[in-house]
Image (cartoon, rainbow, N blue to C red; front, side, top):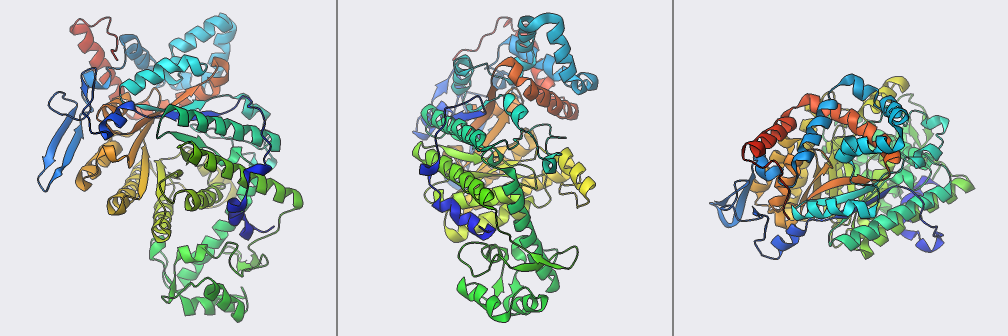
Length: 598
């Protein structure tokens, strides 16, 4: 079976062929949406513990004004400096814990040796005392609890203050059982803030699917607009994703080469339109195929009626409906030699590929049945083209009436804007709903070291400022698409206050109300509460990623949080300053025993 059969197989796959297996310990994610948001959508102005959701006159946190050009449009501004409103869901002990943890994250020695120090503490204090210490510090800050029952108080409290939850069940034992193939030996190294999976066998992948299915069920039972997140590498053999990604990258590079021959290099992806007759001539000269075959490729697909071919037309040639054979050869951009674009799978590889596509199909159908939106996580660049293509195919199928499937775009990549703009344009042409989560990225150090070691161009933007510009460029493009036809949704997954303010400003300019549920915000539990809770109390759809699991199993996650916070907190002391400000305000006003009321 060749790669040009991959995409249609997703449509044809059936859940009947997948044997259901009992749930084992694994990764579990679900969501609980804000209860306040439903009340706002119902036309009511609901007040929770003196936090006004819509009306501005009763709170300093939210400032609204009428737009002079549209009496129906309200301008909403969020005061992220109002510590009373931002931290009213936290008691004083929680504020002190945050200050302690964030301060510890700034010490290089503690962060670099955090795993060794935790192991030593366990030996010195014993398991029970060690767990108590962790729950008083890092575990208590970043983890909700050990099981479903223990996390309920936190979930309900966050809901009361307008913040939903994305539950993430953490179990490190999965990773220990996954043995990396030599080709993937660098896959774990350098990864700070994201979990990765290694392929063990098909049974493990079925177990992971069962975990995701339970996640979807939990999300559907908890709210009317929940999210559930999945990782593609947990559902099948990563070798398939790697090989399929290589095909897609080769095909795109070939398009770029042909565009350069027509003097159209250096343009944005959608601006590169190849003159059809010149393209046919170039393909014939390169020996890619004979003249009749090349003619049939385009006439069979009814492409080039305008006299040009763009990247979307070009990408559509790799599917089951064209006459391109699996023996097609294209020039290698580096060597100039002709080489096969596609190859056939072995019988075993074909079975593994089919089962992976079936698992993805089952999850998507389950999400639709349970009224849950499915968010596909981004992964390393050598897997991502295939992940994005498969996600795109799910969107084509399941996003016809509303956005169910969301793709994740990593804005630290140089090609992020091209990826976003091309996918948005495809959704326009085909009439389905575009769904995206925008992140800055989690694999920067690993990606750069791999590029240097293997000898290809660094795919990451040169610095943080360049990544910020890319993020805002992608975000603005999607917001404009929402403003244009309301057939797109985006989650702004960011801890950057400037990015959140940028989003709010654009929403005000466009007259985009938070109650339309087109723009979501997301942050990690224990981080940037001064952003999450003001947004939630203002009626914006905002979510916290809420991990939970046994203390010993969550230690690797805590190690990553410490590493991630070290860089984050060194770059800005704003969160600590706001925490101190609120703590001092409470002490001076006699609120020594302050407890949240909800």
